[in-house]
Amino acid sequence: MANTSVQRREFVEALQSTSLAVSDLKADSRMEGVDVDAADLNHDGNISGTREAGALFDQVDRLDQDGSLNSLRTVHDGTATAVAPAVAAVGDLARAPGLQRKGRAAEPGNDDILFVGMRRETQGEAQALSARGAGRFNVTNIGSTDNSITVGSQTYDLSTNAGVRSFADSLGLPQAQADKVHDAILSNPTDGRAELGQLAVVLARGENGGTIPSRLVLSGHHAGGQFFGDRGHLSDRSLQDLARAMPRGAAQIEDLHLAGCYSYGRAQLDAWREAFPSLQTAWGYNHTAPAAGSGAETHEAQWEAATRGRVGVLNRSTARGTSVDSEVIVWSQQGGFQSANPPGTLADARARVTNDQAAFDSAFSGATRITDAHSGPVRDYYSNLNDLLDRSDLPANERPALEQKRDQAIRLLYYPDISKGFQATHGGTVAAGYTAAGRTAPDFSKLSRADANREINDFLTRTQGSTDPAVLAARSRLTELRDLTPSAIPLNWIH
Image (cartoon, rainbow, N blue to C red):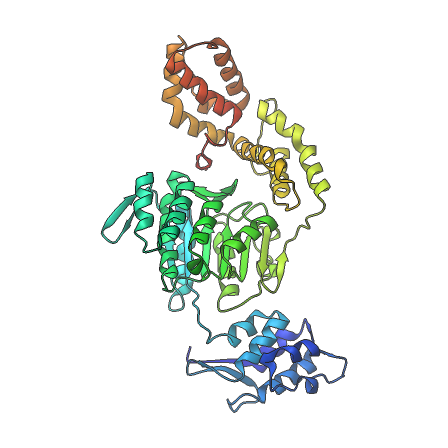
């Protein structure tokens, strides 16, 4: 970054679709020395159109020392020039990321990326970003199927309270902060604590005065406030609590990409912004997100290019013409919240859920069969529940029941996966209970939802009053399958 310049054409093109108030430009202290009035050729109080944009360029160019009438040098030999603040100011007021990027090119910061992948398939996403970064930025790839983490020569078992305690105490933080780190990691499902621990190591480095990546990508399936996959579960809330435990480290994160379905909305944004107080931009998905190998890499490349440098604006149009572009939601400090779907009223959101309730109830009982997990009335019900729960005006006392329905609905949509996971995990327990009851257990992975419900209810009726430990254990597991109990059925049974 020895030298950086803005060409006349790119300056004018950046202003073509906007109008800048002369009063706003003059009120910005970074425009000191620029005769903004002289660029207002028609004296209407605004800078608009190609001629006035060119005239503003000429006035800014009077501060420049590069010897050219067609360029503005913002960085010379690695140092910001006198013209850089004015270029940044125009970029801010015009919401023009290209001008922001070049006006702030000498400011401290980096474009490094911290990539957290909860599925093996996301490895390709991390590799694609690394290829883009060659010579420009680094990508730190986080993801593990292990429950332990090694720091230096010490390995910590994060599946135990003692292991989490020792790990948190090893980060060189004051005890009060170490306690918060411990609590945040312990609050996460066991199988995703290694990822959270790796994040903690990075944030602790920033907390202790070091430099960490400025951009964060979270990738995987997403449902019920968790990123998940074959590497485990990573709770949004646990990660946010971890960030709050190390605010100086978290403050170095400027750009966030949430690469998962149902990962982003207005209420979710508030939580992420509170956890990462220096956040400048965020990108996520209303409902469907592109999968690894089927569009995720394209979206992440577009996000990477749009957020490179010190920018404060991000537009949904960046994803136009790509897979599921209508599902993209973005937010930026200067561009605000942008979604293709206006929120409507709380009453409308409630009504949409109510309208699909009967379809959910019918599928839940097994009376109707779901033939496509990605579309249909139960998928609509799940989407509408997510939309309702994302509303800040939803009364708190309504949330628990709606969250329960949401978490049952996603498991119902993928019931064939759930039944396979159930059989693989609890088949032995169920078989022992059936044997103790003098019966032969079926293979629940091969039963439809309707047949499974009938079989479970029959077993529960026949064994009512039993005190046999094996029968009782089977009854508990089978009840959880019938009720699709969220706390008992891991999301990563879904493939």
